[in-house]
Length: 124
Image 1 (spheres, rainbow, N blue to C red):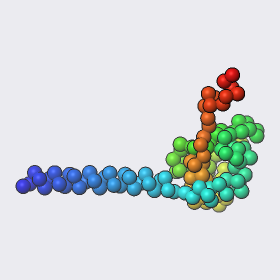
Image 2 (image 1 turned 45 degrees about the horizontal axis):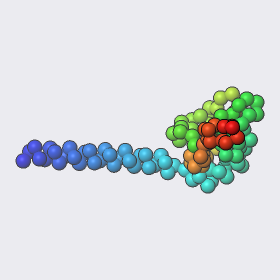
Image 3 (image 1 turned 90 degrees about the horizontal axis):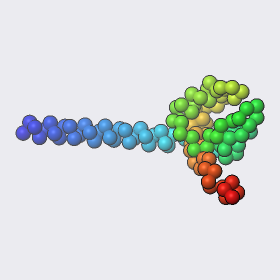
Image 4 (image 1 turned 90 degrees about the vertical axis):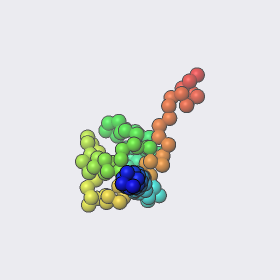
């Protein structure tokens, strides 16, 4: 009788852990509104260096492609707050955490860079 109670308790704990892990992943993925993110991305001028599709570009130095970013939203926001090189730092007074999370959500909807083999002109 006691062994079955222990197995039941262990199973319940396992279900709880898996449920909590899934809910945190869902929360991280649903952290932003991509429609508002696109609006903020364009309104705040991010596209001037990173391109309208997040494909990267150059102003004073090569700006990286940020479409389909794999950075977690928390890391993305931390990067914005203390940006390197000539990129302006976007403090919370300038760009709220919500707007930053929305930009992140928008970037995650973009297809990202294509491989050179996907461009017929480059493969002739």
